Image 1: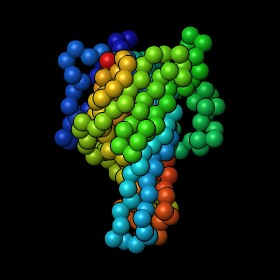
Image 2: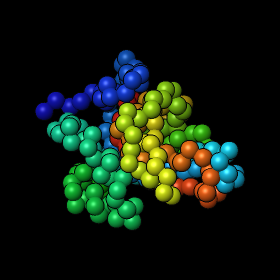
Image 3: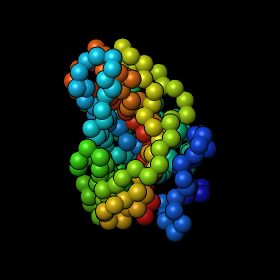
Image 4: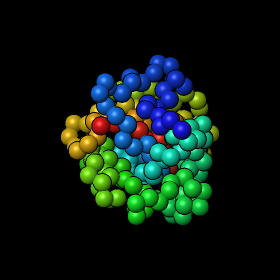
Length: 205
């Protein structure tokens, strides 16, 4: 089976830019975690402000190469799995295969400041990591059924990120998202919001 070299971007209009010439696909992962927001007040004139995210990255390269149509169906299912049961559920359904003595989780995603996403594969014995910044963004192609505090919300945007520092990783795509967006306003919301999400992450270096 041919290994994919680029993510499927044709679901969005406009599309994200393609990977830069000369880069090679290093990892295809499924991310599962939380997008974080704050509300300075609880009235309708205030919008939630993004303050980062945290997620676990599971190796999905074998799905991308062998069952690419299945890969696009996984994020909405993964978003429904409790974080407390995440690792055991991923093992049970075979989303990520344990290889070379590594655990099913091969990386972590978090923010080192409010605007700098960080991707770290060193937890699985790999050298690759990147501190990135957003290069392009498009709305998710279809509305989600996600509900946050009784308010329907869309899926979080699809992104192309570029590394401003790192080892081995130059560009990152976040696509096929499920959940992650806050309500449109802070009306009736707490001062801090954690919104569950899942997504595909494609890494190039």
